[in-house]
Image 1: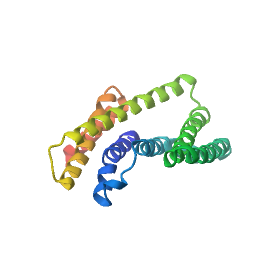
Image 2 (image 1 turned 120 degrees about the vertical axis):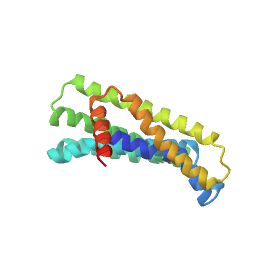
Image 3 (image 1 turned 45 degrees about the vertical axis):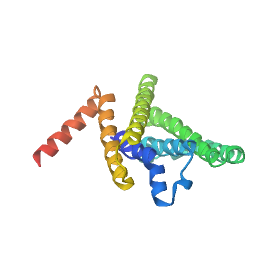
Length: 199
């Protein structure tokens, strides 16, 4: 469910952020593609990996998570400073994304080992599922960006709204396609259908 919510936020953000900026302050302020991609990665990782933070907080594993926080902070500061000097804003964001990835790997390991007491096979399945989710997100963004570029609407505001609706629809549809065989997703969809049907 958290992945679906993340996709429904991240996909329109990636596709429409520069359209929004152009309408708001002008086309000369639109962001470079590298900055948009890094912002999207940071936002998506924040959404998806936060479930590990919930487990750690609930189990009180703050000491076990301390090393992750120290390493992530060092990575963030070091890479952001070096990146800012070499490639500017994108370099700062790159440092943030790398530290977020470290948090994701490190905290998910703590959760699977100490909270869930799962074996390596379950941990591998978790990451394979995240890779599939990443592919679904990428396909959604590329497809929605293509649709946005092809919409035959001249009014910028109307096109922005229509593109946003398309992004949401495509995100939900592709999430369903990529997770069709997942029992948890089927259970969620069944619940939603029954809940809407009762209304």
